[in-house]
Amino acid sequence: MTDKRCTRNDNLAWVAGSDAPEKRTVNLGFIALSDAASLIVAATQGFAQPYGLTLNLKRQTSWAALRDKLLSGELDAAHSLYGQIYGIHLGLGSAPTAMAILMGLCQNGQAINLSEQLRRAGVTRAEELATHVRQHGARLTFAQTFPTGTHAMWLYYWLAAHGINPLEDVNTVVVPPAQMVQHLRAGRIDGFCAGGPWGALAVDEKQGFTLATSQMIWPDHPEKVLGCTRAFVEQYPNTARALTMAVLEASRFIDANDENKRSTAQLICASEYLDAPLSVIQPRFLGHYEDGLGHAWRDSHPLRFFADGQATMPWLSDGIWFMTQFRRWGLLRDNPDYLGVARQIHQLALYRDAAEALGIAVPDQAMRSSTLVDGRIWDGSDPASYADSFAIHARHSPTASLPL
Image (tube, rainbow, N blue to C red; front, side, top):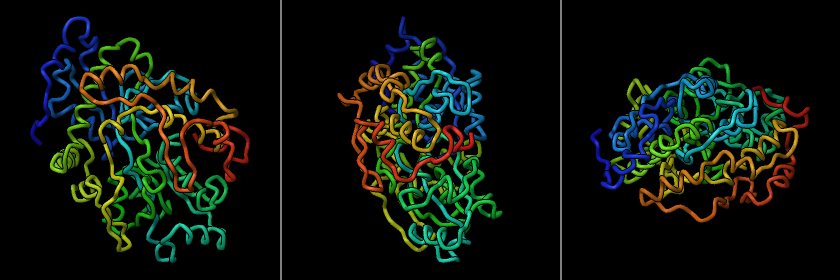
């Protein structure tokens, strides 16, 4: 992959004088997933140097390991699950630590896969899965990647939308993304929700099929973010801004055209990054899907890294949605100050400074409206009522419903 970035001359002003990054070497954590691409590109293709930064990529084996290293300071910032940053901030599964979201890293691109055993049992649609659970009393086991993470929330929301209580009708376990296909092959799980390329790999190796994509649940949904502790932002504000600018430029580069997406897919398939075949990364990276059931399509809501700033904008309503689901599934005892917490975490002023310096439009409002798979409209306007409105929700004691 050659360096095709377009560096603006006025960007160089950011590395001089009082705007110079206080910390010039940044340890950046990531998980082996396709949606870590903007960090990998920023670190390896010359996007950080104009801002006076060196980005050291540190691949992590699990989201729990990534969390622990963020909190210990071994990592300065990381490719993070949206809900994970909120969970840490709220003290769900770890001591509460003030956290920060610098920008969104992507939208869409995750998948729910089921096993070949279920396919052979005639379960190839959501309705058939619900019938299978009801008729057979099957305690199926589904894997997600982190209890407060995006994949847990997509899986639970999708199951509940089809009448399956994820806390009572099935079992759920936590499995690192890169181990999903191995667990499926060994028969330890009946399905999983994870990011690419692992859903495509299950299809390629005939170990399962894709029953739903996350964009079917919520078109252009929030997914990964550039996360760090608030202490990092407060101690190194110029570094945080410079890092955000470098990753924004890398995100814009990837989404510019299919040629850039192909070259990025070629880059990230390497052993030090995803260590996965290009053949299972590139198609879905470009929005080309095959589900393993004979269906192929060009997705209208593919994995997006920039989308004219829509994917990178740290929408307050996106973060608030995850808290409504924490409340729904018993992780929060009471309704929090939804908007207040989101404003603490999202570094909107920093993002605006970085984006505007790069000529990226920033919306006047930090809320957006979306329609999810069950027809519900989410716009962030009344989160407490939204959280309390679901027929399927946690029935057990608060904070005891999900394993942390």
